[in-house]
Structure formats: C-alpha cells, structure tokens
Length: 367
Image (cartoon, helix red, strand yellow):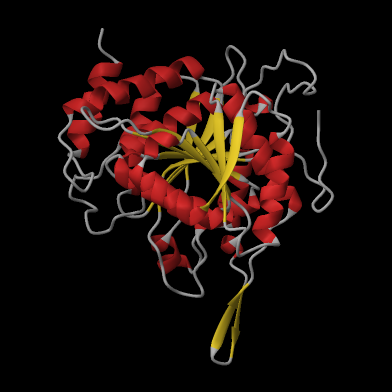
C-alpha cells in the first residue's frame, strides 16, 4: 500500500507492506532495492570526516572487510578540513556518489561557526531525503540500570532547515512542519515498532505552545497510530519527556518526535548509558541510507587513541542489516555487547580505541 501525501507528492512505502486489514504483516525497514541476492556485491561510501571520525571509522571498515567479503568500499572527504582547503564542506560529486551507493558510513565532522559553512551531514540528510533518524539508547555496561529504547526523529524539517533571516537587530529562524513529513515519520516509527516487537511508543511534542505546528504532528501521529491496535501509543510534552528520561528511562521503549527535540533527547539518553560513544544511529530514506555514530569529532581527544569506537561499530551493524546482511549484523552487534564489559571506559565514555577494537575482533573472529 503506497500512501501519497499532497504537500510533497512523496510517499513512504514500507517494503512488502500489506493493507492494515491483513494480519499477515511482515516487512523489514530495509529498502527492498538494497537487499542482496546471494552473490551481489554491495557498494558503501565511507566518509571519515574530521577529528576522531577516521579513528573510529578506519577500524570499523577493517572489521567489516573481514566479516563480509562482498562489500566494496569507496572513500570520500567532507567536513572542516575540506572546507578550509577547498571552500566547501562536501562536494556535489560526493553527494551523487552517496546517492548511488547502497549505503553511506559516516564518521564525524567538526562544528564550524561560519555562515559560509554548511554541515555535510545536514546536506546529505536533506538532499538524499533521509527523513528518519533512528538512534538506539541502550545500556551495554554491566551492573547498571536497564535502559533500552529507540528515538525516531524527523530528519529533514523543523528547526534544521537552516532557513534564517538577518534583520536589523534580530534574526528570524523559519521552522517548517509539513503534513507529509509528519506522516512519513509516524508511519515509519510505528512500522519499525511492529517489525521489531516493540509494543509501545510515545509521541513527543510541545503542542501546548506550538499549537499549529506541533499540533499538526500530534494529530497526524494519532491518526496513523489508530491503525496499529497492537501498539500502545501516547503523547507527552517534550519537557516532561526530558524529565522522565532522566528519572525513569525504563518507562520508554520508543519515542517519535520532531527534529530538534529528537536531537536533544537522544543526547540526554546517551548521558544515561555512558555517553555518545555508545549510541549508533541510522538516517533512512526511501532510496538511500546513511549510518553514523551519534558523537561529534571530539577535537580535544583526536589523535590520542582514546576515542570510543563502539558507536561506530554498532552503526555499521545497523548498516549491514539495512543492505541485507542480517546474520552478520547480529553477529557483530553481539560481539560488541560481549566486548563492552571487558573494556575499561572512563566517566566521559572514553576508552583505548585499540583495546576496544581488539576485544571486538577477538570475540567476533575467535575460532
């Protein structure tokens, strides 16, 4: 069943999805055009970026190359270093290469506070229409309080359209919330929950103040959720959600929300489980996908061998699942889960990169 949304003409059509009257529903959030045949070579564009980006992505690609022989890796540059050298942060050629790839594996880029600089991550999300950001918040360290939920974030609109206007004595930022984007992220998040056996989801918003824009989001979510009787759905104000994540994270299994809220709440969740070095993320569109650790370039520790690689490795596991290597994906994710208790991680989520990678490899490739 394909749903067309008038404001953009675009659709989110879950692969293999049957009408909701059928109870024999089975689909994967992976794009069917990306799922491999037995001997199909897959093409992944790797963009290490700045700072610790290359330090976590390089060993991740080494692991992938040993785990799966039928992936071809191509490298491209993006970020601050490229901007300083060439005057742009990502080339149109790289964006086109990303469009043609089966997936993009991205490292991290350094924030540049210049009106001339454009975030390459935001450019890729928007130009490839990667409308769904998926961040998994899960406690992997031993002897800790259980935290295990996923945040779905609308990835192309809201406060991150970068539509700002300079006026005398003030700046106006335009915030766009469309019906089509609300429908896509609502359908995607609910379908993901159905596929992965997640029985409850919370729509997070600020409709008590932003009555038109966030009100639209809540209305569309409720409409879509009404077709998922097996999933318990509710909504919550973003400030209340922040408090509850901090105080009782076990209350949550899934959250769907708008761009800015999702960005902030996922960092809050990361703080509960050891930091962004443990948080993988996916950016999913109808035809393309990009996978990246949720952390930044961390220039203060770049080159010191203390970058936590677990988020990058887990992001690559999500990528493997997306392009059809589900068995290998599960094997890699399980190796990380088994490795974490044996790696010394400090209070800032930092660890020996080499030690962490070697521990994963030892578990993954032991005979």
